[in-house]
Structures are given as structure tokens and as C-alpha cells.
Image 1 (tube, helix red, strand yellow):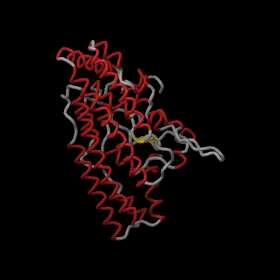
Image 2 (tube, rainbow, N blue to C red):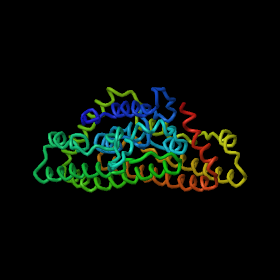
Image 3 (tube, rainbow, N blue to C red):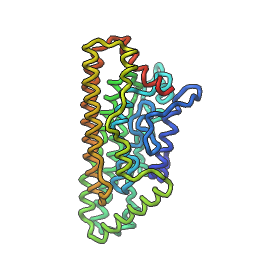
Length: 336
């Protein structure tokens, strides 16, 4: 996970995330990874939402590698509600607190949270410079973009979970925090990217876009996933089937609780529809336009998470402790 060249390939990132997503089960028990993405990766790896988030952002914005970024959507919200991990499954992902030592977080998922080394998180400044042959002013702008990329990566890295959370409302809170950090990171990169691209002439822009096309072909050679439009659409079902019967059988809801659950289900269905409608077309050609698409998508996801989280918290507030424990047992049971 320290190999920047390897992590520039979305298929490689998906393979790493897939191995890590199931590594926390005690005793080597193989889990049913029902929350796996169509491209082979996982949106949740233990307590972490969106592993390699910044790699996915700049992989699409700069190179047009769409599989990693556009594979995220409503099913990840659903997996946040019905978390697949129990406490024993999660404990291997984060270090245990030790008496007398300051807890620093991190552990096995630290590098998937976001690596701020220039070889991993820094934009390929030398590669871009070789392609466009920049003037002195353009090279200075490219340097600013590379430094902004590192700052953005650190912003996302700071949203790495420092503790295990075991309740659905707290999982969606962690999910919201992660997306908010990604939104901030995009805002950091956007101005210097637009400045650099705006300084290029038509020939240089053509060379940069050709470089991105070569990068996409190289990634596609090792990845049989569907193209962007299909990947996004496939990741956004019109609605996710809720285990309503199991919830009723386990929790024995009263009328007030059942009404709150219905509001949560309706809110979730609306979020699913909005995310499905917000799939980006596959013909976006320039880095600034692709980054704008990233920004729009993240805004839609953030609002969807906020809406579902509010409805979930309202439902959760109607439950007693036993009902909450029964609700949280649904996801891990499904993963067994």
C-alpha cells in the first residue's frame, strides 16, 4: 500500500480493499460480502468508509479512471445502516488502547484512509510536465497543483476513524464526516487545477487529454469492469430491499416505532432515487470538468447521507436498549 504506481490502478485498489474488507473476521471465517461493489472493491472496510478516497478522486479527475469513484452510492448508505461487522470482527482493524500510552488511532486501515506521501498522493507532476512541456509560468502552476494535492490528501486522511463505532447512527455520522472531508479536498484542488489547465494552449490540452486516454487504456487492460455509465447505474438500485420482516420479528415494534421506520424507509428510497439520477455521463473529457462532476456527486451523496441519518436517528430514538441491540445484530448475522 506504499506503492504509488500500484495504487494508481483502480483494479489494484479494489483488490486490496476486498482482501482487507474480509480480513477482520476472527478465526479466518470467510464472510458473505454482500456489501461488495460491482467493480470488486468495498465501500466499507471495517470501520472505514471509502478506502483510498483521494486516489479515486484524482484518478477520475486527472486520468478519467471511473470505476473506483463512481462505484459508490446508496448501497454504501444501506451498508452503514445494517453494518456487516460485529465488535469481534472490527477489533483487528484498529489498535487497542494501552494503559499509560496516548491513543493515536490508525492501525491496519491507516494507509487506506489516505497516504500523504508525494509518491502516493501527489499528482504525477513529472509525467504531466513531460507530456505538455510547460512554460515557466505553467510549471509553477503545476507545482501549486501538486502541493494542493498533498494538502487535499491530508484533509481526507484526517477523517480516518480513530475508534470502532457499533451503532447505525454513528456509522452514518462517520460516513458523513468522511464525505465532508472529501468535499473539502475537492475545494482545495479545484482552483489550482483550473488555473493550470487554463494556462495551457490547445496543443498542450490535447496532449494532457491524450495522456489520460493512455492511462485509461492501461487500467482497462487489467480491469474487466463495466464502463462508467454502467458502473454508476449498476451501483444505484432504485431501492434496496429492507429486511422489514426480520426487523418486525426481532424488534416487535409498536405503532409509533413502525411509523418512524416507514419514514426512514421512504427517506432511504428517495436518497436511492436521487443518487441513481445523479450518475455522470461518460463523455466528460477534461480534468476541470471531471473534477466538477466529482464535486457535484459528492454534494449529492452528502445530502443523501444527512437526510437518511436524520431519519435513522429519529427511528433509533424510539427504540429501547434491547431493540437497538436486535437492530444492530441484523447486519452481522447476514454476513455470517
